[in-house]
Length: 376
Image 1 (cartoon, rainbow, N blue to C red):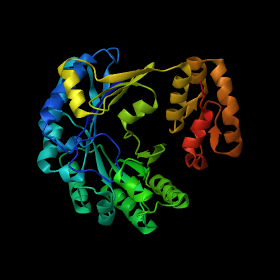
Image 2: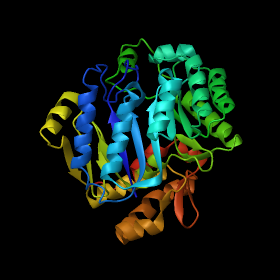
Image 3: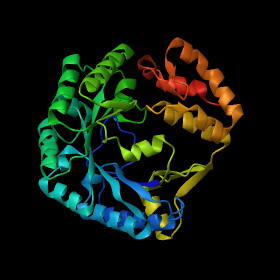
């Protein structure tokens, strides 16, 4: 079982916190989509003819390009690969693109899951982040999506926004609950150096939130979603039973996926590859039928570290039997030794089968994972 990820590198405007690869120049959209079809064909064997379970359109802003181009890429996948009859086909969309016409078109092309970048229902937050929508557009668009029959919907919220009050965070979550959606992704705001927000922080025009504020908002998030019947199945993801993200879960469980488009990453268990982060170079190379990618062969240590990093973030955790089967006794002994202090401190739980993070451990997820890595 495998997945396909399309990176659609276009946005109407640059969000102040985003460091993903994208362009605000839409002039060459059609040519780039054609190049993506070429790459899809050239990479046909990357996942070893495995059944495609998930197709995911990310970005960038996939909803910003004409819907028929999304349909063409889905058709191309079906011509090249065997696709599961109940495959999850997801599209990331901005609220201002959720028109009734677009929603109907995406549904007709096979999109059956939407990931909506709301980020906040507080308009002052949206202006601060330079988002292209307002809260009314978000609520209307989500309502329309449900009305036309797309019920598998997730949305993003951001906490830790400078000067965000607890009342505003409560209100954001309550609006989400009132919309009766089955999935939420919630992220603490990260300050990336090469962004406008990074510049504002570096020049002391914006002050970042204290870690204690992040933790209070994260704690409320965990408690509120649990009370509403959501499973906290990954550090940043909360789903009702039956509505976990199939595509992202495949990442965390180490399944194969091929990434198509500028800056997209691919993984097949033994190697990781990534495409050039330039629309122009990407299109030029594929016009010559050359793959625009670099490849890193993963050592056994790299593979172990990948497993630890992705699995510890989830409710499935690190399975000791899989460590022994996949990596051998040496790595099992190393893991048992390095993780024991966190078990004793209560940050990691062990049920005899798997190591998982406790509620307290979730605040330290990245640090715990890095302390478990095997360094070459």
